[in-house]
Length: 337
Image (cartoon, rainbow, N blue to C red; front, side, top):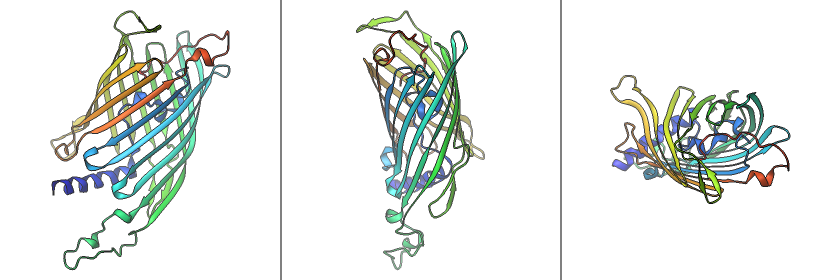
């Protein structure tokens, strides 16, 4: 009974999020292209990233993955990114897929400050298969109706929409600030009812503090640092704050993040908070691996289990990709995961 109630609440929350919110990842700093097209190529090293998230794992809940590749075009002072993603809720037959092509242009604001503006265009596909759903007319005790006569029962519906992104980034070797707008044109699709994708605004930033002088680790000069960072995202009527700190002590990485807005929920005594994220990771040569676990802090803490997330990043060494004799540019100080 407890599991059934939990899943019922999960479905209600999920359906409300389908109408208002994009899928979210806890390790936003490891998947920068998902939040702002201006990050495409900003790292200078061309890279492949992959992220997988299993949200509310105990309920066989929302699962999603994302993969991207971006590279820096030195001569053109530009970057190009390609991103594909998919997320689904198998228990209710929901699935969302997307593909985005991104372009960014980078310039110099001052001697040590760079700016980057970006745009992304792509396509989204939403599908819903109601075959695994139980409708209201199937809950009658006497008689039990094996098949629903609801017009949406046992249907497979899909629809697509054109997508758009814009973003801006300013950074130095110590700090960065980012703002982006996703779905600014409010695209719509129809899967049995008209659904509008609300525009989403992302604001993020951080500052890297060097703990000691850089150390020589396996022929790589890598600093030991601590980086507090923040992400504020707003979509439709929902807003969420990610606030935390990331510690890099070669070759290990650790971090802790709070997600939510610690203000009272209207009409209740509970706080508007979501989760506490704990991160561990390791960086070996060009490969970075990060794992995080979300400890649920919401009002459903007794019903919903935590969420798992894994990220992988592989960076191609710039010296093998750059043209001989070209001057190195300033790299972005964001955490690698």
